[in-house]
Length: 168
Image (cartoon, rainbow, N blue to C red):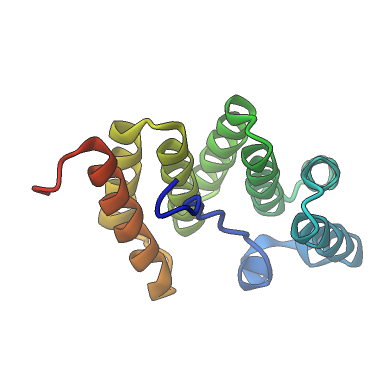
């Protein structure tokens, strides 16, 4: 907790990423799964949202749309994170990052690293959070939206603060 509020930068990969994601993400079925999942998240129904994101991942992979699969995995990981299922969240974030890197989508891989840094902060693993946040800041392919840099700097400062090291 920070100032009574939980820090959490769960970055949804949605419409902004659609042009890069390929077939399934942009299809009517992919759009429907995304929208239903987002609505369930807003309602706090994370388990049901996770089921939809898992379904989206499976369908994306079956259709050979790995870019779509990355986005569904990221959102699946976020659902697990919000249910405090950190191990499962980390597995999905790391899988999503690996796939994004393998298909050459380094910007999305960098965005996922911000989610991982946020999760490590919540877990109290400040060293790991700092590592991932620094990776985001030094990436050759940072997210284009300047908000990501601000969120990353905030996460980095919070991790240092929780570590008791404000010299950085």
